[in-house]
Length: 158
Image 1 (tube, rainbow, N blue to C red):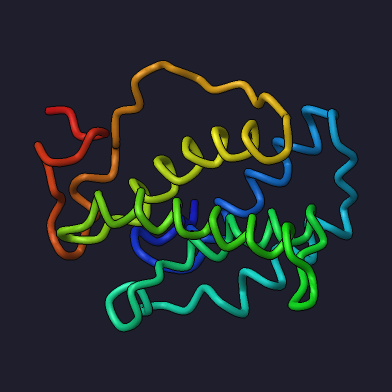
Image 2 (image 1 turned 45 degrees about the horizontal axis):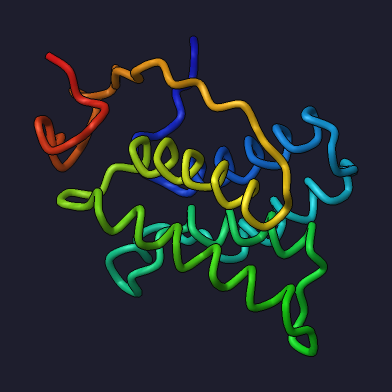
C-alpha cells in the first residue's frame, strides 16, 4: 500500500529542504556535498515542529530553506554577511507563507516557498535554477483536515 505524505506536517519541510539542496547539487554551479544535504535535513528536523506555525508564527518550511542557505554560506553567530543573509532569506520565506494562510496548507507552502527560494538562490548565490512555469493544480483538496482555501489558493482548480 502506498503511504502518502501527510497533508499537514513536518515531512513537508523536509521535502522543501531536500528539494532545494538536491536542485542546487544537480545544477552544479556550486558544489553541494551529500554531507551538506544531510546537515540541512538534521537542522530542519530540529526546527520543523508540528503546530509551531500557529504557536510561534514560524512554519517549519522557513527554517528548512534557511538551513540550506546557512549550510551553504557557512552562517554562524560570529559571522556577519552569512548569518544576515540567512536571516533575510528566512524572513522572505515567512512572508510568502503568511500570504497563504487561512487555513494553513503545507502543500501550498512548499510550492510557493520553493518558487521564492529559486529567486533567493539567484540573488544570494548567483545560481539560476530552472523554474517550471507550468500551472500546478493541487490534487489534495479533499485531504485537507481543516478545509481547503479553494479559490483563495493559487493551486486550486475545480
